[in-house]
Image 1 (cartoon, rainbow, N blue to C red):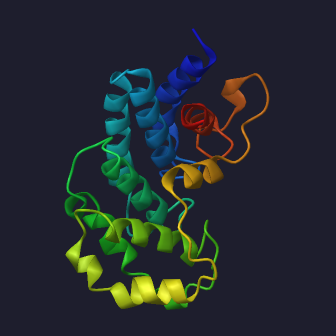
Image 2 (cartoon, one colour; image 1 turned 60 degrees about the vertical axis):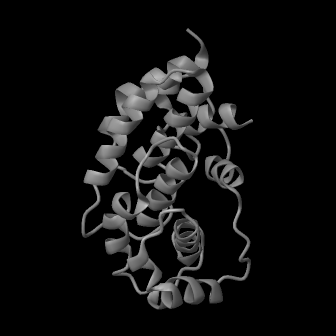
Image 3 (tube, one colour; image 1 turned 45 degrees about the vertical axis):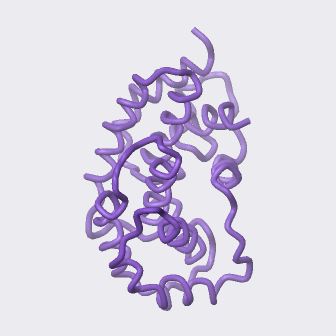
Length: 202
């Protein structure tokens, strides 16, 4: 069994046990990695597992879930839009993302002081821009255009939106070190899912 296959098997076994549902360190990032690998390797069985894991992500969203891109709603929403727009999954984003949008709309962007990608308004901007450019846009979300687009954009110096590949590679960052994959984190950032996805995207 090759190195990537060992990492994939480890992700399949361990990912359901992580409490983090976010993009950088949790289940959302693992879902993206598994979907890319399934297509790359021609192994749809990993699509099936990714679908089950995505159900866990969606059921894990609650009133206390943060808004941020790293661990919260913005990153999860961006990840789901990535899957939909690249045909890793089928669905109407109006329906799939309704719960996320309803929670996210409770946050007033004008009150968020952090302007970073991971924890602040820039990450929300990334998600909102991607969602509003979806073929199946949430019309209720569009009514908040002034708040979520103009307000967010007005607070961001660099308004350029990286393409999906560049954004994912920036999330992955450095690859994990050490030969024992059981000691690696599971997620995209410096973890098992990031290792797999970087091999696929490179």
